[in-house]
Structures are given as structure tokens and as C-alpha cells.
Length: 504
Image (cartoon, rainbow, N blue to C red; front, side, top):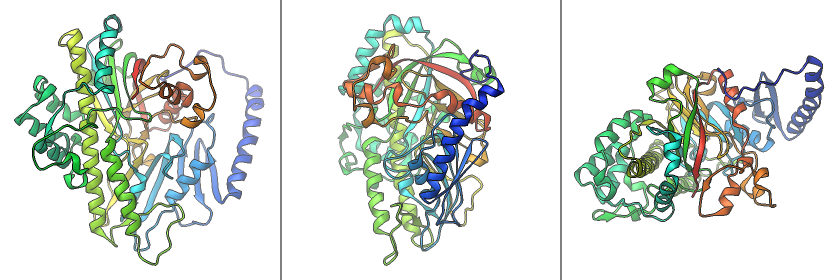
């Protein structure tokens, strides 16, 4: 069963030809313009291949796009630049692809990019929003039960998410353990001295749920890479960033499971039609920004003296040239990723506890938690030279693994199962992808209907956030899901409809 099917009759062949002719002509002109700009671009069954004409030894980068989506020249150039990254001392790109929510990135790397490298890593390919990711819980409530006391829930969560009413002090030892060992280290320390709201939660249940967090939510980090103000040697730490949503496209959203497509997997994962669900999209906040900026500058500073800087501004770290720098970067990235895992865990725990305060001890188990912006060892890669896969605005989609792809505040989100497609480096999209920039969304007044906000409940303190993140800013989610299913990247398990969305 495919999502978002409609009941309209299919057009005749002559009608299809009339409609496709102008589109074909526009595409031909677009590809010709890109060729004049130095890009070799071709299209084969929905997959675009792009390479810089002056880099014939670079692997062609592939992009899966729905037929109705525009070809964005800036994003294609960014992808071709990523495929052409080299280091004078050694290291190469083995494969580059992009998911269908592909669009230009502000840091020079297209959102949706996935790159397999050998012998080198590229800090800019992850950027500063390290371990931005998704987390999904289902709740033993139906929509009527939730909405009957909606006002109370919104008021309590507004305080937690926007006004700092969450009560989450940590010991210095807890913070350092979190940076060093992620959710597992954090949990071990919290057990010793649970403070604030954590004295009231079921820590055993949280530990059991770590099996449903990608990589257990625990990477090998080191607190030396974290900001000094939240890594003291002793005492209590009140971190203003932990358990916060963040800006951009991050959110906490209450939803309802509106459709089950794969009944077998939905049953195994504890998901049923009519259930309330909540979805969290957040990352490593200021810790990621701190570590990302540190290594953006450090990679540039470590570029071999006398060698020409890359025109793309993407500075790689070579294992042959400086294995210590590669290891240090991966450790620093893991440090921020650990914070991101715990940040989402705590956002979920706040939401779960507020639901229970209002509705009693309702079950609200975790379905899955997975990262987006992260560098991980490449499955089947060369251990001798070091092989990695780096995702920027894309998520892991290994065989049998849960995959979470949100739509927008006004569109469905999807729970899927990964199929481990090697052509796309066992990856999938992390959303629908932006159709309009935040700047363009705020340039002129638009009606609620034009913005797609009619009937949408967005809880935020800033009106401009509603406009910047309005449904009209995003591409339609249906074609994004459909083309990934057709390409064998994922299969749909369930579809969720938004009820209310919290945006910081």
C-alpha cells in the first residue's frame, strides 16, 4: 500500500504528453545551463547524476528526486563539490548520494547529502547541528482523551519548553559521564543521585528503551571537547541548553496514528491506529555549535602548508597526514552526539511526565530514536584505511531499522522501515525538504490559507516562527515518501497526522 494515493482517474497518453512536453523542455534548458556552469548532469529513471566537469576522477553524485520537484542548481553544485573533495596527503570520496528532500545548505553542503569516504573525514559535511535527529513515542490515549484536557497540557509544556520551568539540575559527574558515554553513562550517574524531576521517573524503563535508540545513544566522546561552563570538576550544573527544542525546523509535536500500512511491523513496534503519538526533532544545541565551529576552524588550520585551499571551502582531515586529528574530530563529534541523544531523551521524558500528570499513568513507550547529522563507520568498509559514512540532513535506513520522516505542521509524518539500499548508502530523507527559505517566507504578508496554516495549531512565543516554518515553506511529503519506496530505500509502516506543534 502506498501513502497519499488519490482516486482521480489517470490522464490519457495524449494528455500526459501535452503536460510533460513543457516540463521536458524546461528540464533540458536547465541541464544545458548547468553544463555551461561547469556541471555534468544527467537523468536516468528519476535519479540525477552530477559531477564537476573539471573533476573527471571524482565519483558522480546521485540524487533521487520526484519528477515534479525542481532541479536546484545551487544544491547540485554543492553536491558535486562534496564529491570532488580531496586531501593532498591522501583520502578519497568513494560514493556520494542525496535523498529526495535535497536542497541547498547554508554551510556549503547540500541538505540531504550522504558521503562515503575512505582515509579522510570532512567536518563541514556534518556542520554544527551534530546529531540533530528524530524520536517517536506512542501513547495509550486516543485523540478525544488528549484534546479534552489540551489546554492544561499546552500550558505545562509551554512552561517547560519556553520558560525554563523544567527542573533538571545535574551533578558535574553526570554531565561529564554524558559527554564521555552518552545516554548510558548519563543514566548510570543519575541513578546515584537523581535530582529534580528525575527523582520521579522510572529510570529502569529509560534504560530498557536504550535498545530502541540508534547505537544505544552511546558513542565514545570526551568532555574536553564540550564548553567549559557545563563541564566543571565538581558541584551542580544547571545547563540552559539541555531538554530544549532549539530553532530552525526543530519541534515537539503531538500526533495521532491515522493509518497503519504494515500491520505486522506496527504490531511488533507497539503502534496502533488511533493512538496518540509524540515526535521530537532536536539535536545537540549549543554543544554542537561549539564543537562544529571549533573543528571547522581547526580543519582549515591543519591544511598542509603551501597547498592551495579548496575552492569549495570544504577542508578534509586526512588519516595518512594526521591520524590524531581524525581521531580527535570523531571523538569531538561523538561528544556532541551524546548530548543530542540525551537532549531528545529528556524532551521526551518531560512530555511523558506532563501527559501522566494530567491523564494518569498512561503507557508512552519509545518506538525509535535516530540521528541525522553524524559521521559513522561505513558498514563493510576498509578498516585498515578507515571508511566512514557522513550524513547531512539524512538518516540511517538499515535493513529492518525503524525510520522516522516528518512532514510539516500541516502534513503527515511517517514511520517506515529501512531496506538498507546500498546505492543510497542505507540512508533515507530526514523530512520533506524546504521549498522556500526562511527569509523569503517573511518577505511579504500572506494569508493563513496561503501559508498552509489554516487549522494548524502551532504553539510558539514568536509569530515569525509560525511563518518561517509554515507548511508552505516545505515541499509535499507524499512524493518524497513515494519515490523512496519505489527506489527500495524504505517501506511505509504507519502515517501520523499532526495535532499540535511546539516551536521554540
